[in-house]
Length: 249
Image 1: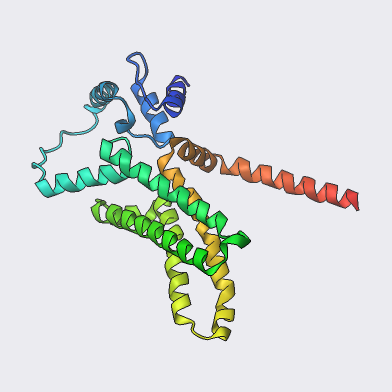
Image 2 (image 1 turned 120 degrees about the vertical axis):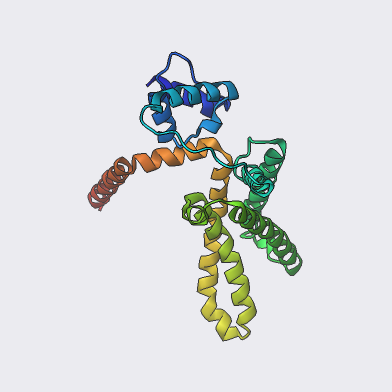
């Protein structure tokens, strides 16, 4: 549709426009399909779309009672939430998002470098543990602040990106706790397999980048919308692999 072309421009250039000649319902439904909100629009286009939508729904919804003025604490919580949840809301939000991306990149680099033999000396391992602890500390503080300032705690826990953050943070604390609790060599051997599995779960650090890049979010929404086709494609690939492997024998 015509609205999709403007959404593609938003993915490419970071600016979402709403033209006066477009159908507001079609454009709004397209935004909902791709997980966008009216706050992603440019200010002038956002006012235009809000006016058109209010004119469209004025006959279907009764007028709401005027809301009381927000308290200073509520305004502060909302401002803090936007700072951590919406990287384009302010300069401070952009700085925090950049710092988060930097910590994610450092974590990924350290995760890959820890598999090299040269990085297994005692001095290097101590430095690696310090850097990992600093990164995990930042991720934990960021997640706690976003949880505390969220208006709906249950909705916050159910969001996929927040679940990914939790899966990326918890393995570190579990592995540290197990290392402190297992004192003997036999206990360490029994816990070795679980510790290796927990280290593998640190790959979720890569998925934390989805929060800061709109293109990755769009890709995730696309895969979620067409998961049936993806499953069918995987079945075809598996069938083809089974047929050709049988012929090769």
